[in-house]
Length: 227
Image 1 (tube, helix red, strand yellow):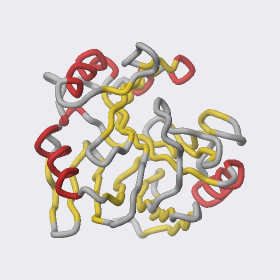
Image 2 (image 1 turned 30 degrees about the horizontal axis):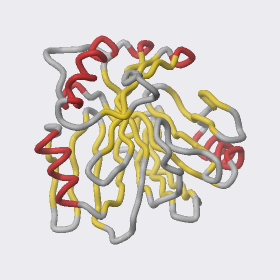
Image 3 (image 1 turned 120 degrees about the vertical axis):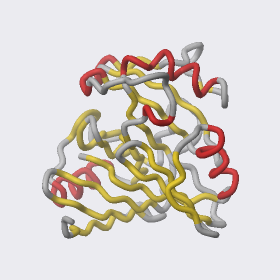
Image 4 (image 1 turned 180 degrees about the horizontal axis):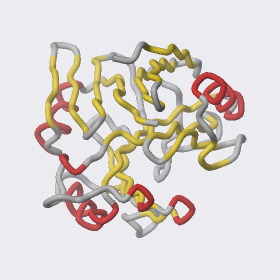
């Protein structure tokens, strides 16, 4: 599954633009008075101005061979989040490693290097090394119920976790991180997960879908015409 576009809200539009474009060096794709979007590999990440406080968790896929270099790259620009003393977090069950940091609006951003994807690394690590958006978190009331809806509508499968507090749905190119909003905090922080509006477009094989997730943890899915 490929996450083609992800739209999130922010109270700090100008600060977010400065963080992603000026500090991290992502390509600015489009900008208006109330929104901007960046090119993140094969994905587009958009932020839209809102007055509501939000906190999202999302991740970018990066080449596994550049994890050490990637760790130093954001650390020179913003502090990394840690689990104990570890800045590079190992996920042996996923054959992956990850680093985490806050963006300008305190979303939890993750760079994850999945060895099974064997993404090519060309040149020094930079924002251009990002392959695409690989994860978006969905905090819900019933993990099993959300998994059932996604499986029925999209045909996606359970990748990892259980159907109680946490379930990753999809594949290594694109995952929905479905968590229990009442008991799950966003790793590796003490921030409690909570549903906030999310709009995204995904592609699965020859089909494309638009998804809208709201503050009530409800998800609407619509199949789109392929271009």
